[in-house]
Image 1 (tube, rainbow, N blue to C red):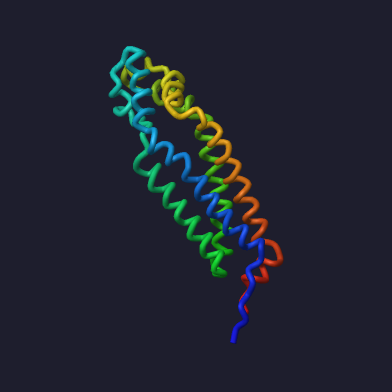
Image 2 (image 1 turned 30 degrees about the vertical axis):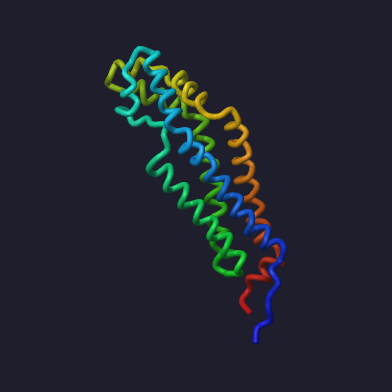
Length: 190
């Protein structure tokens, strides 16, 4: 007969960090779903203000409303993180191993997202400048992105900061907690 194992606090905290990371990771795309149409309309209005057809954005693959890979990939990652957290709570040994793989990958992905957002204006302007269409080359990417960003709620930068902090700290702390002796012993085969 097997004795019931008590789950160490480190494992419980690591599991709940997975839920917090999942929620934080999904927060920005959820805002994108809620405000995407308004943001798209603001960007198109800026294109019109610049004297061009608003359809130029879509024709050049630039859309601000969340859909496709931006949505399903984020929610798949969110679901996987939540499932991993649940598996940690149930004491599944494989969950610890998967967490050691998943958390660094999420941390790296978060860093790539932040870096991509920081260089968005330059990338969009380069896309416009490389176009064979003079109307597209005339567009001011910074003004379009500023108009789009202004359509989001004022508290979005705060949410982005909290998201970054939760994902970064949660991933690092989750790995550290699962590497501690109580977690190692808890997941060791009987």
